[in-house]
Length: 296
Image 1 (cartoon, rainbow, N blue to C red):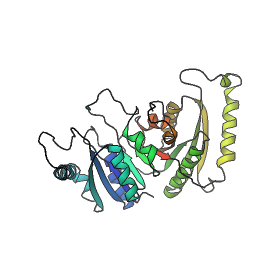
Image 2: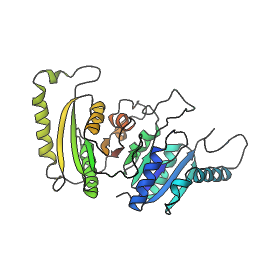
Image 3: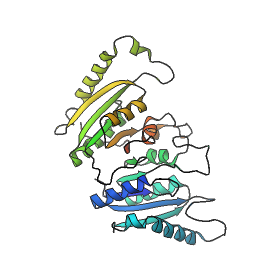
Image 4: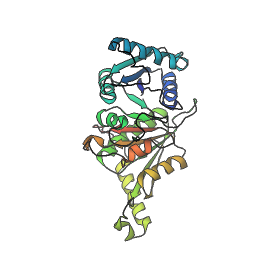
């Protein structure tokens, strides 16, 4: 796993958590590392548009600045390259992902001042959402700094029993096996963020919790053969409880399914559980888009 990693780079973050994670993974796995940045029309932090220059000069200038900016982290990663394109970020990113057969994308989020302060991550048009919705390889979102010697020894997978969740679980099992890690499978009984779910007030909550655990055991136990695992369930607001469970279990990574490929792109994604979890402070989150996986 993780033989070709693509890192989306930008200087518009206070702490370079995503690059540090990508550099560390590339060193440990002996992976090829691609640093990518797209230059949109207008102003860009890597280049000055005060003077009119050719696109080739613009790209060359940005590539040079990226190399200088990350020189320290890249000095012991011989198998790396820097790619710069002009155009819409998520579209250019998708082109290189598909062309290069990338097996892991690493992205971070803006914490410094942006040109559009009214736009927050997780709302319409976020690059992370658009990338996640259109690629088959997993996307790791890193928001908090992790130790350089960190290993993947505890994986938390959030499921809602849907087909995309089953696909994401297959990936989580593969990840746990590859790293000899423990896998926690977690389901949240969604009580409703704005209006209560009436069915959870008809019986004691333990009845629903026990049923969910039994369902997980029936559905997943066969696929989990040989993998250290545990099933967990309780009620709450999904993204809040996933973050809490990751903290309680000291998870090294959270795995979730991405559903945006079936959504209208014009709809806001602020309510998307994977996006809310991924962009909250905590351990890295891996968002897995649906593809047919047979592990059950």
